[in-house]
Image (cartoon, rainbow, N blue to C red; front, side):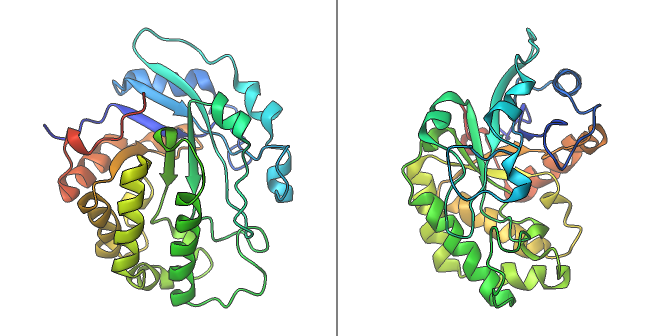
Length: 266
């Protein structure tokens, strides 16, 4: 059976500093899910645990008390509404979440590709070339997959985001092309064994910066290695849900995904 669009596991509310839109609240998010016939969604506001050293100033206020302002989440007899977060990995490869919080949350998404945060996720003196960014892609994903994490509720977010090359978007296709195939096979084989989810991100699947073949190569390799996939709109504002099903349907067709390829969050 073809992969069914019945969930969205990457959604921000106005509590994320990159949103701040009062209309992007749990009630409106639930209405979106109901209108699209989704069965399960997860709130994943940006987060850095206050007990973990190494946040940027941008992350400091997005702590436990802050993201818990969304609670209690509204209920529905049609949609299961989960509470999670999007944490981060700094330049020292420190993950911004404690074991206590890992245990408390329903789902945790981790982007390894936030390469636009100078002196936080990458050093100020980084030698900025497509090859070096490709190798940083490998290094940061490898670091996450080497951690002691509850991978059955971990999602690896937007592996083909323009944030890899935000300041030089013309380098984006080349950077993805330079990620070694053998390294992708090694990492995705490990991710599959660990049970981590691989995100299909709505914005990534619009291919607005070119490189469609290079983007799809990443996910075709992950599929060949046995990885399981989940969908994430990564929405920060209500209008960013628009066209969700059409874009994901196209992606599912291009990757040949079936229900057997779906990451199931228990």
